[in-house]
Length: 185
Image (cartoon, rainbow, N blue to C red; front, side):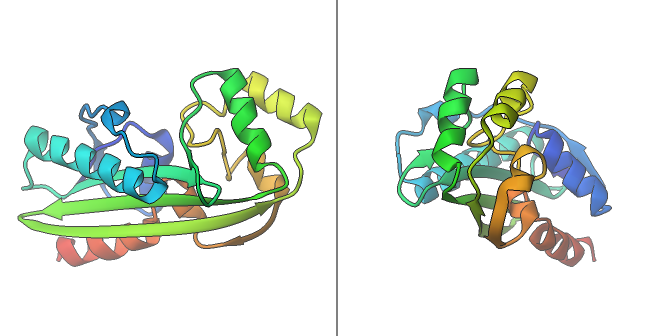
């Protein structure tokens, strides 16, 4: 059994599909307390902060998984949209462009810590205006870094990609499964 220290439905779904037994128990961590604008530094600090809070809440007698995901255009940190207007702005930045989706993950168990930084790069076609408006009105963008759902709205606009889709969805499940198999022995 694994403790997923996240309220993400997508992360939970990835673990279910990988048949990794888990319970979802997020702990509070204020990502807004992080002042860096450097995308890689931010994702590492956010994941580490969440992990430390989960250790305080749950200890490490059961494996703990903490993760955070960000989007970057190569220089800017793109986080979750706070409202529909911000979501539109973020999505228009991605339309017809290249983005990197970066996920940092930490698994801790009985004093051992495993860390993974993974990146998936997407090259998008221009988004159709009407399709974009429908997506924005649906609210499905909420809770996703950059308002981007690569398994949903953005999927039909992918020209090319490198990396794992699971990384872009919030967990590099291939890595998580490998580590879980090691610690489950």
